[in-house]
Image 1: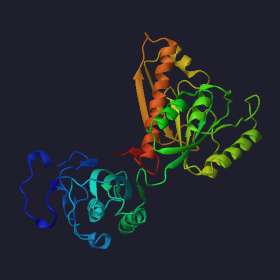
Image 2 (image 1 turned 180 degrees about the horizontal axis):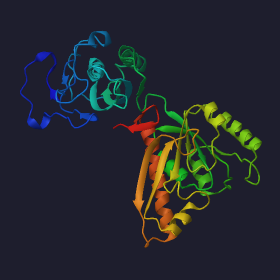
Image 3 (image 1 turned 180 degrees about the vertical axis):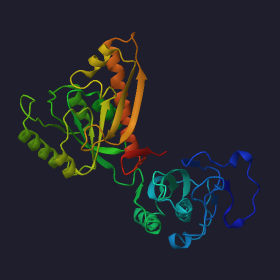
Image 4 (image 1 turned 90 degrees about the horizontal axis):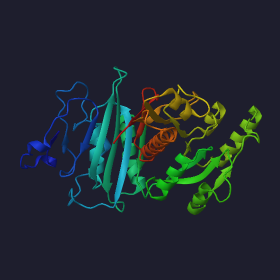
Length: 379
């Protein structure tokens, strides 16, 4: 990338450390800290890379942004808000430069930009990016910001665009579902209490009762999160009618949520429920599948002498445990590990894997691609 001042003003040449050309792949990450991004300030040198260019171009600017460079703006100016923009469109000339110009025209500073070009469809490659930027919320109101970036959608016929500003935009509201094992639930609650998850937790639903005074109940009471016991049947062997009744109750409870998290919830979501809820659901399961299904998979894997264990977090679809994968983690085990150590390692992976997936989601870092069957995690 070559960086030069707006309007062709003469400046000393940049040092070799600041000038480079990335030609290895179509996934690109930009971190600009010491040069201001103004209209015409970012030039992508991709002449050695096949495909379209996304740098400064004459096309698209006039219709997208026409504001002049803000007077007195400087790259070291302190801003009190940080925004996140995710954008998806067909691969076209000038997308990155249009995003940069919008931010600069409002006196903002571009912090980072991570982009990827998907060439699965050679005739119609797709452009994906996540941009973080700082700005002054007093001079760039949310409605104006959405209108500004909305012009990108019209200009480039975007398939997805979202803007999120922590502390200003409404937090996502989530519900957590759990069964007997509570290690993933407790980890989420502790991290949420520590401020590591930017969301609202509306409730915790379980198909197994938690007695009064249990560590789960006490922590939920401390955090003012309702616990809802929603059994399927007294003997935990529900009929189809009992399952549908429970799912209808769950739909009513979760109607105002933005997403659900299955924190080791061992009940299968039916296709009618998924269609009725019609929002994102993230699941976690141990990485022993599909080899060790059923009761006590840790014991099954331990007895089989496996050497590698893991955890997978994915979006829930109508195909059981076949949804788009968000995160996967692995760890090694050996003959030196006792069964309790084996289970502890697996549960630690599950906790970390689910937290990673949830934090990616809340940070607007996930974009689906490949006919929505795959998930990319952008920086």
